[in-house]
Length: 152
Image (tube, rainbow, N blue to C red; front, side, top):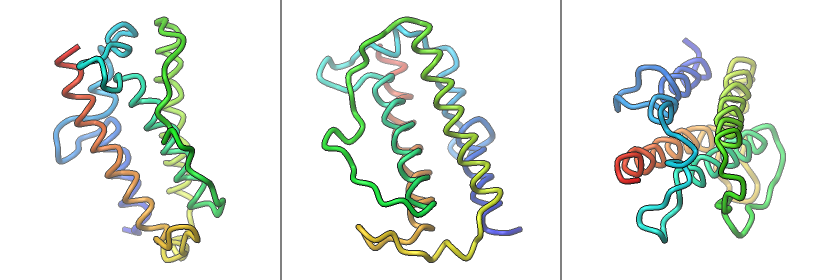
């Protein structure tokens, strides 16, 4: 199997499949309400919702990077307060997360594997490292979300 297809399976499994770590992003978020998503424990922490928005923005950032666009990471590192904490807004956030997943799966399905060794100019990491890095980033924050679901 080509490497891009193997990586695509990792994305699928972590998102809503059968990953090695036994929890998935959508599986963890499926029963989270807007109220729970916007809660903070402790109050100085990021909320589940803020973490999900951070995931979405970083997923889209890295996707653009491996498509050749040079970006500057904002000072807030994509952690922004949630202004609209309605259930409808939370559902829209989950839709955006699913859309980011679809964009990644489409990209991975169609990508030229010769670009894995391309270097991103601002940090000299390969596209391959960026792609694996975003999977690791998702898994890291999934751990935080899993703990917060139990606490808020």
